[in-house]
Image (tube, rainbow, N blue to C red; front, side):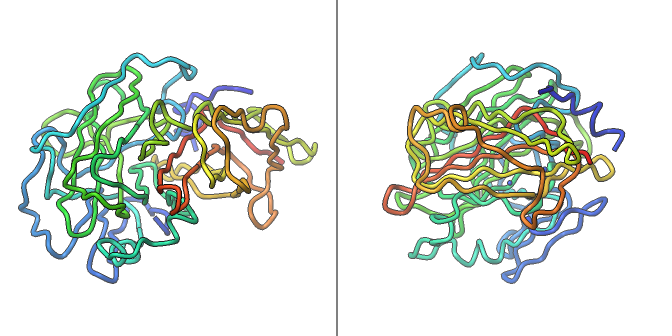
Length: 355
């Protein structure tokens, strides 16, 4: 197993339905909502002149390394955290400014559901939604939120980077939560504002970062190790220590990769997903290669894949070879009857598949 220095790996070479072509293309949805190539969500009711959070950067993208360290990072993941906090977003953090990703994303389906009394069963059954392909320039995830719920994010940003989490719920002002600045490893536990309502609502969440400098927005760098919402997702990140090895596997030699993770909470739904990582003109993107569901979910205090190894054979959903670099993404969530909490976590290691 090897830890990958992402800058050395990808520079020579992700969480929505189409991968970005160089520069990105704005996506217009059925209801008029779109995500622009500059990482902004625009809806018909937004005239571009709404209030902005003073602490959050104006719309831009982020450079994102799922699970690992940012491009150029070289330290292994630490089991301890240098800082931890309980925060409630300030009123001025609520914003009409919108964010998005420089890629195509089907917001029409999402916003048609948002604000309706019925809860989309798909999110309960399929969990937090990272589409089959997305760009690491900005990480969008569709999941449930509720006012007063805890939100947890495990991350590390490059020096000089300003990062934030933004939450979009139909019929409510977008919420902008600035993340703690500095280059230390952070595990932040935040309380979602009451303005999100006391019922479960489907939402679009984005994690983004820009460099803290004047002038036109310039992409920053951030590493996200885990993200989740709801009481079961918080404490630390409820799914962590995602391991994926060895560093290289050969299909010709019939080698396989192994993966494991630790669950700190009970979840009655879970899935492990292999993501193929691609560099497109410096824009790191991921595409789903294989999804591996866990029937019955996972139990609290359990090492999944340690006693009974979990194996990936290097092929995609069509059983075709998936060559190149790959990351492991683990999602876990609760069904409608259990509360709708959700969490996602990523490996700090990549596995390269060769012929």
